[in-house]
Image (cartoon, rainbow, N blue to C red):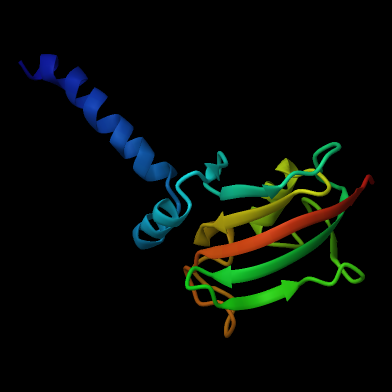
Length: 153
């Protein structure tokens, strides 16, 4: 009898277990995201994003020098960092670990001119350590990001 029930149990339990493993947002933050941004897309690594403005051209790639504007916020709306001056954008080489892991991942989906709202799970942001005193441990981050330019290596 148990042998007959085992496949059924696996079919019921396994998808639930796999879903739980893939979700990286804390439960309260997930509820907030699903309530406020039900149409947000989800990357294969758990980053949620909404396309606000569409750019054109090729997506950014590892090794490219990218120029960005951004505002970083917590879920409560408080801002913790920003770079919004088009004459002084934030520039860095993509995929070299110069920024949080989520940025290196999500910017590779963007094209010059794209402006996105990006919701980053703690483990792809500043993780369990945070970045004291500005960013507490295990904090979900919300960025408005605009990719201004991509320069190939």
